[in-house]
Length: 246
Ligand code: IPE
Ligand code: IPE
Ligand code: MG
Image (tube, rainbow, N blue to C red; front, side, top):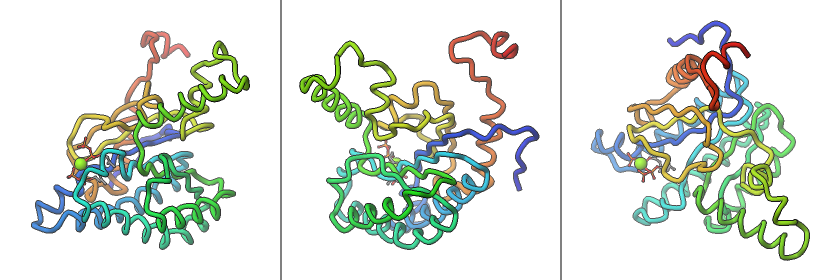
């Protein structure tokens, strides 16, 4: 069992690239969807752990804009799992005061998934214990294109002066508008890349890569990541001595 260190700082926003489900299943000579199903158990456990620890925002990368390129049977299977996850978790979310948000353009998702998603977002909108962001049909570049188009439209209509566009204005036009940037980004599955995730928001995020595949990432592994995050010194461009003196 992993214990949290003394005087632990709980990151306000943790983002996770849940990778490795397919390989986890292949290692067991099972179809890839078996790995995705096992991954749902990790989602439940990590959401619960984050909520108990007092993480304010948890962002899970569930389906990227690039994932549409997978075999259609896998895409359909993933969408089915997503729908049943939302349906089965609504009561728990309400009980644990968890608000669901979606990062990504929902209109490309199957209409039945969109309906359940909209319903879950609406029913949990007043929950304030933790925000759970599900990144669905999410791409960091797509998000920036949407933001730029939105800003351009406002400038054209005269609602915004182009000279007033700042880093804050751009942040306010992303799917994560109003939310803090992630403090910690975890990627399971052994790959060391961002795969189009939170390109703007992860500007100063601490990155934590683990070889563990997502179905093997549970409460203890999450606590371990938080412990390791706590041993890092975030300098934001300053010197170590300056940060220590703060
Ligand atoms: C991550 O696991 C889940 C999704 C992308 C939906 P993968 O399906 O990418 O698993 P690997 O990387 O093939 O093992
Ligand atoms: C990233 O995983 C997307 C999600 C976890 C949803 P991928 O498995 O799609 O990433 P790449 O293609 O290996 O970079
Ligand atoms: Mg993968």
